[in-house]
Amino acid sequence: MTQLSYNPQTLATFSNTSLATPATSMAASLYSTPFNINQSYTFAMQFIWTGTPTGNLYVMGSLDGIHYNIQLATSALSGSAGNFEFDLSATAGLITTCGWVQGQYIFTSGTGTLTNVTAAAKYPQY
Image (cartoon, rainbow, N blue to C red; front, top):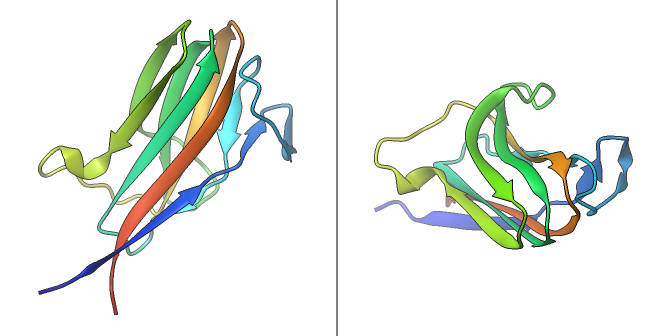
């Protein structure tokens, strides 16, 4: 029987205007640090926010850890506080060949604070 090691990580977020300075204000688009899921059986990502932001949250995948253009999940925000979780293993048979994932918030209007972006992966325990 193979045991799995669960590895959760809180990811820092950055404004699209300064990808080097941490930011949580949802008055602009935000991007999380990339999360490596190479050699992982599955992963999950969670977003928590306050305020009244309007826009879209995305879980984006990448094959090379640089170009995030594979959409794995999306959720529209409609102007109220809330949370969004995406668990790859929640749908039987759903898998990805992506090696990296990134959380993205694409701003439309409103204000708020992205208080948490967490990702977790399950790896075989050696």
